Length: 151
Image (tube, rainbow, N blue to C red; front, side, top):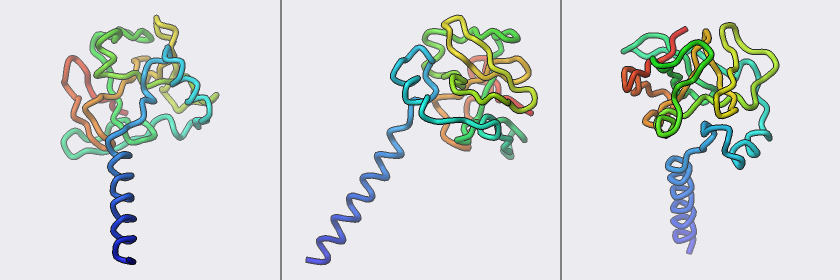
């Protein structure tokens, strides 16, 4: 009987871990999604949470969000203006700044998008994550005019 209980506990633990891995948060969806905005308001971001510097052997230092997701800039954007809209956002979610702290790190600002959403920018250029990345990956560099943001 004890063996059966141990096996059931192991199966449940593995199932819960698999669920967590394959069901990522949609935290980076546009601010126009009401349910996402509501759930985000419960968390308070600090200046230290906004950007961090990571290093990859293939590209050197790059910027990442508080979850370790690489941040990218879009070659068609202008300073303070995001041109990634519509279907572009499916692969390149904005780095949502709807809960930005009052004090931001050097060179980090918040822009207001044409859809009214708030987005972090680095040196004026809007920041995005890549849907094909996982934490610590930088697979979107050079894809569709997007480049990893570098400090």
